[in-house]
Length: 352
Image (cartoon, rainbow, N blue to C red; front, top):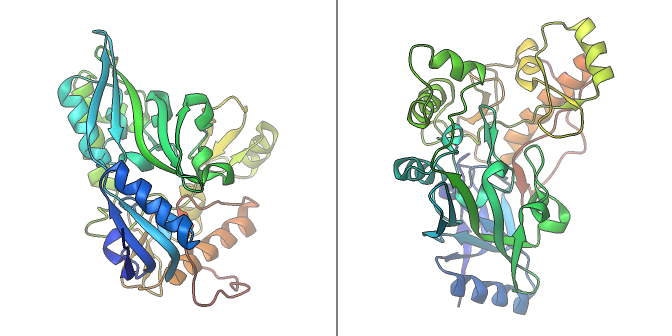
């Protein structure tokens, strides 16, 4: 196996940023992946797995070997008439898989329709939308350890899922490259339509897996910019978590700031990052070719920027303004990969 050198990755990230891989190889089967991992170990270079690039910000240079993961295939592991177990290759398109499962009568994923990216990226950030998180349906993940080339089977508990996170976003899991995900779906699942916007969309029709799927697609198409037309990575900031006590204090000063209980057992309260950003006037603001979307105050759209530096500069200014006004630290949702030619020590405070 001989990787390509100095490969442009602009077409492999949904922000359409210019980024060059020192080495690049596309893999479409596990044997090719094992060979690529062996090549990287032999040459002593770091490895960066890359699917559809829908949740990453790529800096100018990605050192070492970038793996273009094109693994495909869906395998039925078992079917007892109630629940089905599926093994889905990491390179399968996520939305295509959700629609396929729905068509087969394998239900549960409807609320997660139209989320950009590949199946392999879904467990990494534990994608979620409209009251549902993908971790609810993941039985396990198969991955190769990059440092050894060994196959590792990780059950649900070992994945350590959390809000927009998993072991694969933490240091102990970043040595893994996901090759497939095992799902458990239901043939007779009740549709989940208790999320306010879904409830409103389905006022005049029954909530079924099909109507929920259609409603989610319609809502997302109306509210969220299509990455193929307006380059973006979806939500750029996570909703911050605070304690119940801090939430009460915050509600006294900003009673209109939306709050909702965390889905985990931490007892924390999540605050709406979009509301805070919107209150500070960032919606529609364009700086150096990067714009906060007109229709959604969590999405940064690349209008004309070539470098990730422009994206990160705007993100940092937004984060600083939120912390100054609300005393709340926002955290970036996508992974930041590679190196910029020069990082400034400090971004001066700015107002929209």
